[in-house]
Length: 488
Image (tube, rainbow, N blue to C red):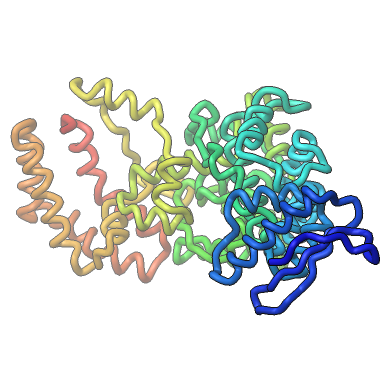
């Protein structure tokens, strides 16, 4: 490495050095650089050459010196091949950086881009548009989180929203790492992750839902609300592409086009008995040769607001997270009936962890069950199915066995196993129950068991609800006895 000398033709200090390719080059420092600064840069260049030869990254002290240099000097080091482009691009302002990030979101949905824009607006307000991206430290990132909760205009954000914002900030600054503008993410050490606010969860019972539906005059909006509560659909993303022929009445299921978070797919949802009356009602309002189920609401962004207005006009108080809580209430109900977690995941289109964390609720009925565990349980009201629009029976035992993967010809064996379980659990509590189940196991009630065996044929050759009615009538006697049994 040569000494620093002054070259009059260039009016600047310079020095000679051997680059990593073993070629002699001259490094000109430019006008305005004094001798002391030139000596420090010469030492830095010497260290950078050695690091390049051995394939090492610059030392932390060298990196600090590079970042403190002016942009022209860093560009000269980059041109000489002694540093990476990261050291030059790190001078990019936060405004330029975020604009480039938004340009990279062309594949995202419009609603997602709007959320990103709002957060970027808050970032620019707090950090400043001309702030260098590389100057955003972990401490400043934590200050931004506090600012969102205490000082953000026009209103403060909740803890759950702040955590999601921090997660988005991580995504934005991770883009900087990919572009080699920064070497670490300042938001990686800031608390993020989704958190559930139980105060915003509310269980909407079937009875309350019936009162709410009565005040909705628009047939399309009424059926949309019914799909959210009785089938657990996501509103509005899962109704936009729904077609009239997506409901298969004979098979008893509803075909759903999933379009969520940039992911597309398909899934099937059973047409639960609670939904059938609403479907029969709405089917009469459909226009001839109508393709989409809800043509008026396909691109509507304020369905929840319209539903809230209907509730307020009728003097009913809307609940928070209007459609999310309807879906949550449906999942809570079906979780008590369907004991197969994999089947629940397939029906409602989410993982067991998400379902448990965000949707399943503890209702007043659950608490009453716990508080009255040592008391005699109240009788269970059962009703025989007599018409297409009757409610209250839900899934029969036969359907539950089918959902567990048991074939119709295996029903006898499955029933015997279930009866053995009941006898074992009630043998110390109710002699009446044990006698009933043992009598049933000995096939003394041939009529009921014959109905159970033939319901498989009924399910294949007739309508879904006809099979449900037959099963409900078959199990009517069992339910009357079960209602009188003590809980174990």
